[in-house]
Length: 277
Image (cartoon, rainbow, N blue to C red; front, side):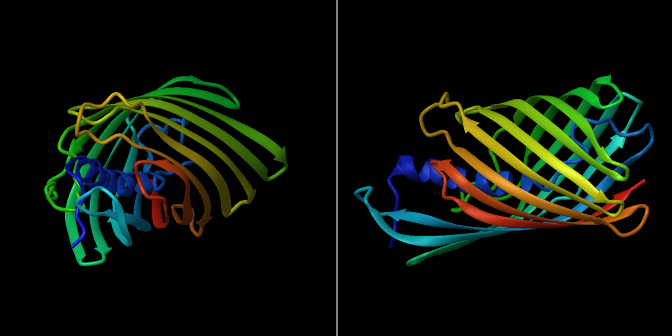
């Protein structure tokens, strides 16, 4: 039977939850970004996000003792709505299922992992540039936290984010865009806080198609208390969106984690349906 030293077990189980949540964060519509939604307009997406990573087991002495596999599937409808010309609000509940398969150690967990709600205020909107500020609250879910792998955070998360976007006309009918976001995530309880960075570069070469690539960084600030999760992960994504009607789109995204600290690296995907109103 594989076991982990108490300290390793605490951050590992929390880290599994964080990787699932982080992987699913890419399901948010990147080309909305810093731009506000039109008043009384907005969109909702219905994404399915599978994810897989290799894990490392430890024996009672804390020595590596065999690899395993973590698999997860997440569904999290995401909604944005233009409350006024400057205020955009939204929310996202996250329903998750995760399986941990190691030698002599096979466990699973499922349930509501988190509910996020946010409000974004557009500070400046020019012909090509826009600047916004956003506040977000992550409410802990009701999935079993004592299970291994853990899935729901025991404490709330609070985030303050600054967003900048710029449209780039290239040729008639061809437009590109750049979006950069930086945020500080305060995680209540013993877990370390996180500095979040996201850069997006996209292009619409045809009227019905949008493509973008992203660099997404969660940088743990190592200010957590004993037993609290403390991790960093760097992800790269590539996405394609097909607008098959005036109000409906399909998105396909591929995710690859290229660097990490205290969490296993994995890969995932997102298949999402968007409805704009």
